[in-house]
Length: 236
Image (cartoon, rainbow, N blue to C red):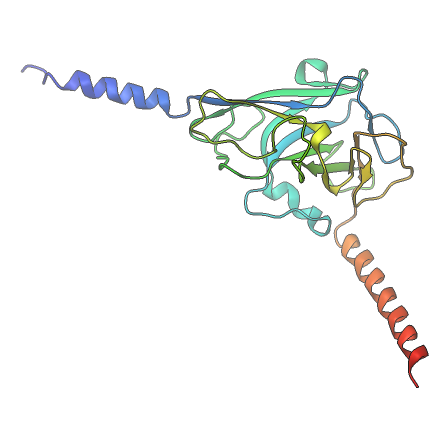
């Protein structure tokens, strides 16, 4: 029996679709400057125990009050860690990474979950940590590019998966919003022993589950008591 003449066309089409699905799309260059000011909560330069990840939280909104839920909702795009060949040079204080997005929305990084699909427009975060476990020795910084005005690079958002020729730069120098830790001279929530005069990134002591809420509740109760005393002073 002869092979139908149209079968090779279907095979070619199938091969083309297989090649296109997950083919290389855009490339992202991310990281800090050379000999940058990267500190822990005590003002000590970050050492080789730290790692740096870029990723998204999908529909989850990370806050200082729900730090215990971050890891379960975190989707890694790429990771830099010691030694230098993996992107983190602690002796010269810089971290860098290069990662590609595929046309199916996945990351080509070996540190990413192949099942994670990153949707266009999702906010990208940088998570620096010495351990993701919430224990007294853990220090984190979770920052993002909340204000794009004056950026040295591109906004920290997932690009269009249909963009097969674009390249983007996500620079630490553009980080302006902190969920924990500090970025570019501004400390966000977290525990610190010192405030460096100049810093690009500073990690903070991670609060134990529930402690952040208790601190906020205590502050609110104190403010309420002050308002009541003030009100009584002005009552006739």
